Image 1 (cartoon, helix red, strand yellow):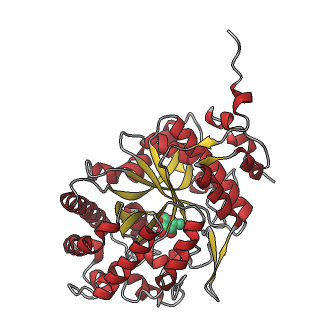
Image 2: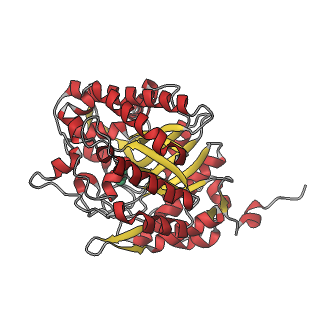
Length: 436
Ligand code: FCB
């Protein structure tokens, strides 16, 4: 039998993604729109020392320009959220102008032939809802369902994928544990109640949307999943910590909301190596890094996305609903995009049913309590002039989308050459992660 030389054959090959793959970027209303005066964040931001969203990237007025750019960068899908506090600024009073605005926004995406993934709740709540206890109050579930009932007949026709809620775990963590987000509170039971109420809201809205659209329109959540591993491979205690965190952080919400997900929406940003000294956890050691990091100090760890994808792999489709890097160094963003997408391609090759990727974020935006400094955008915002400046990495992403794969020519951004074949065989990036 003659020897097959796959390496030679594929040396210049493109690392391909499946047909019909969705390519786009994500945003959330409060982070880009500006002027969201009726929500709890606006109130919180007015406190001394807190970052203020102000006019943000003024996308409320500039969405056409932003969607034109996304289209010109080959995006065939877009993830965005609607702001509940604009649509229902007072309890039970729905603002037709705000609904009309979002209708125009979604129509603008459809006109550009982009698939729409719409998030119904992305962290902000109308002030009147938080005045009554926010998610701690069981009535908020009812209010949220009523809000969704109101928007279905107005906006539903433009939506291709529904995301009911964004990252329940992050919301709980930032509000009740880190207490960096409104309405920061030290309350164990408040935390549990909020989590359970968000789960109940998801289930109810899932059922509502399925009743309204029996023939389809997939419904899911966007969940922040972390890649965990023990620092010492043979430490039983560290293995146990990994398992507990995996259950509570990555799987609990799914367990509480079984059978109400048509797809899994994954936001991936973090990797943690749990370290213990005897029984004593070493937090600093657990978060110490051996890889490059973003401007926020978040470790760049491409293998992590492979880990969470293979861990979650199920029969239902997976969309990466957020994955991105805060960096003013665009070479770093190029490397990030290529390396993370290589890992996604590898997971697909292993049989994981990934159907789309939404980079966070289309444009620079208001990164919650961290303000405007972190720069996640494919498109830079000059906040003085609101000018949009397309970053070179946006063009690299556009090239990947155009070919529905990572062409060999882009490997130059890694500073070394990796063949498509090597990636699919499980090329170990650990050895080459330290680029100059
Ligand atoms: C995610 C949030 C998103 C953005 C990114 C950086 O946790 O969903 O709003 O802040 O992180």
